[in-house]
Picture 1 (cartoon, rainbow, N blue to C red):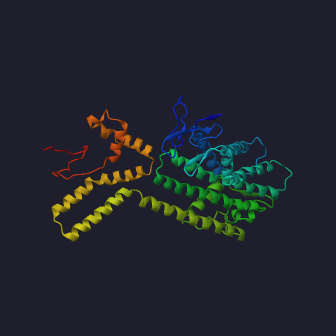
Picture 2 (spheres, rainbow, N blue to C red):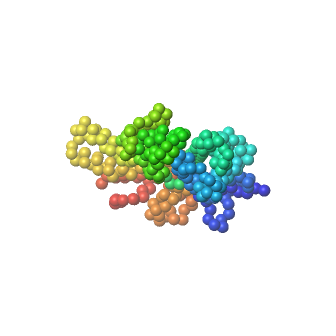
Picture 3 (cartoon, rainbow, N blue to C red):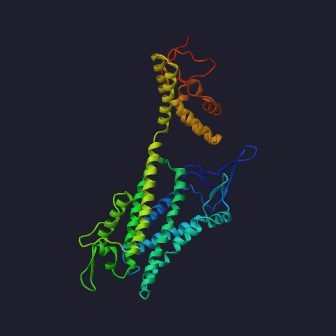
Length: 427
């Protein structure tokens, strides 16, 4: 049984509309219709879009909750604990996503591969290992429910749960697919990426700062006591600040560190302010990560600012070259004013030329569809074009060129002019 797959470059179908087949061109240029097997899935189905949204939420949950749970929270005492149940739901979603990848078509050399064998081999050679390991490590969660497990082994298994963070590499696949069906402002994306890099780096560093203290028998032997966040009440009784307050303190320290405003935790009310050797090693790693993160943020912001308006920057550069040219040739003031005014009035020509270069990257069919849509208002101004054939209109709009004339200038004859602004006198 075979069915028509979604057109990869389409935007989905209205309810009740039949599936559109994939159109492929033969060597002689004639179109043929190619059908995909019914058991493969196009990555541009609406259901895949919805599934990407679900997995994106799970990725954010993994990035935020898993490090905090491993570092700050005690192991769950039962399989009905709310956090344990939520983790299992997330694990099931990622396991289902692994199964989905064996049926999801992928693009290779300009064509869509719909062979299950090729799809499976492509996935097994690519992302499968990372996806499988990051999901298989979920078995370590069940060890925390066993009462007769060695405490040292239990702590190691809890730390291994951080391997779930490898799931975050899935975000590259989701972003790649999102770029194809979403209007993305890359400048805004870079700013959001910088903000997320700052927040996630601070969050993970805060969790790491506290996680190292869990491998010591007593908090009194860690920086928690040295900086006054844990106090020995008696020989066997230790009192520490609540977990929530401890996380906020660690997050604050790491944020200040990334921003270059602090070198380490501030002393608590009973602290002496000393790190142990092992804590200093971990803190060195946090400092290096903070330096790289801050450098990434500064570099990204500089890139966004430098490329915020490329057309405006190009126009200013042309004006600078024009002023230099006029000074060199000593043009009079009136000529200089006319030349500057012409450049200001013809700024849209550069934008139109950039749009034409963009259209040239597309297939002839897409060029025709886009050109007709963009120029529909221009064509409506020419009455005798209303009943012409579509093929003629396509050739016409692809041949249109923008041009600007100065006042009282005579336009060359032999051309069709469609007036956008200003006035024209026929003599």
